[in-house]
Length: 482
Ligand SMILES: Cc1cc2nc3c(=O)[nH]c(=O)nc-3n(C[C@H](O)[C@H](O)[C@H](O)COP(=O)(O)OP(=O)(O)OC[C@H]3O[C@@H](n4cnc5c(N)ncnc54)[C@H](O)[C@@H]3O)c2cc1C
Image 1 (tube, rainbow, N blue to C red):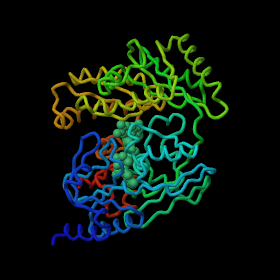
Image 2: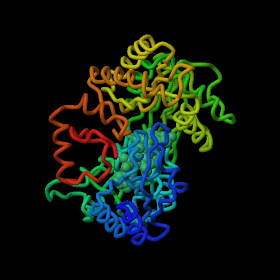
Image 3: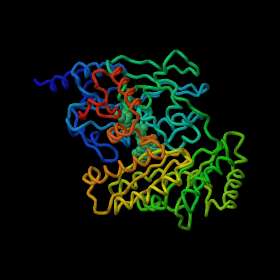
Image 4: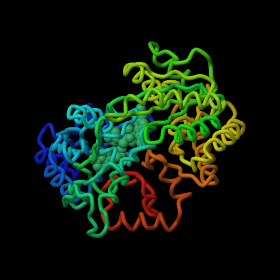
């Protein structure tokens, strides 16, 4: 019996037939990332249902030195949940850990398992008159554990912050199988290091998040979603400042996209319609919300904001949602950009941030530079302008071969874009994380002191290096991806 056989037998004994499989047909769907950029192999797929089972399973992996790739909804954008090609790792799926453990309506807190899907979380807390103020296009798949491990952003960061701001407590299994029980919903707690913050955004390299206590807000009483046509991204930036000034706390979301993105979505969703009759070089989606007792002023607030924008020549046209269905339809256009672009063909995606004040300049100057240097490509920037975070995608020339183009010209494009982002004082990962996609680039461009600190922390928490090796931390000696 080989070591692999022994590991598989012991894992199956520990977790039972539903908890562990090495049937390649069952494993295969989980070996490729959402974008289809990476495909790996695995020694098995573990799907435990409790924290205790995960702790025991991690101990088993440590004994057999089997690397663990934690996986939630597999909707991540950086290949962090995809194992390497050697087939020596095990995929640890959290998808069967999906209980809402407790909800305290008065304290506005929910404690849930890591495998709870974001959309389920939204629906569960909404039934109690509350809301979880983080959403994103992948909400039907993304899990609480994945959102925490990538410190996800989404379309409400402008007002509510990233996942980091929503987490009050975390439970996690560490590399030696110990359980960190940090589900402490205290508002103030100064007992030394804030260990949960270390785990947030660590992409499964420091621990396996098994549960979390999350902050909730009262549900919004009403909202207006406005679709706006503009002539340029510079105007969009000025519109953002205008909306911030006019709408204040009511401003919940501010997203932008060039005409190309809207056209791609309309081609992808045959039943969808463009919200405006005319054509515009850029589009903005602006959401304003009202709490109880504020709904009456909402319409006048939106109208005043828009008429001011028209007077200042910031916008060309606008339409305000008149129903919840229309508001949803506008958001569906925004949320469908990623799948629509994926359907077109290969692209190099850059989830970048630069200081908000320089974002328009970045898009306007870097896009033509990239297109000129790499003929046949097209630069498209869309997303969270309010956070200084744009998804800057370079679409491949028409004759590009998917898979090959990304490895060759695509790689050179990303290096070029990341160099320019660095020149602008920005970040090569605003919200999607590093995963396997950007690990080398982080190693190339990151601050050496910060990188060494990351390596030291990784070494301290996972001395065997079994938690998601080959991801995030550019270890000098970790050249291969198991
Ligand atoms: C259409 C679409 C739109 C998106 N829009 C946005 C957006 O606007 N903003 C944004 O930030 N992201 C966005 N995403 C990306 C994605 O939804 C997020 O990164 C999300 O947080 C991933 O959650 P997941 O459960 O799918 O994690 P996975 O993809 O399964 O894993 C992501 C990373 O977290 C690790 N991980 C997962 N679960 C755990 C756990 N329990 N413990 C430890 N490590 C774990 C994995 O090893 C991996 O490194 C979008 C995705 C899609 C498909």
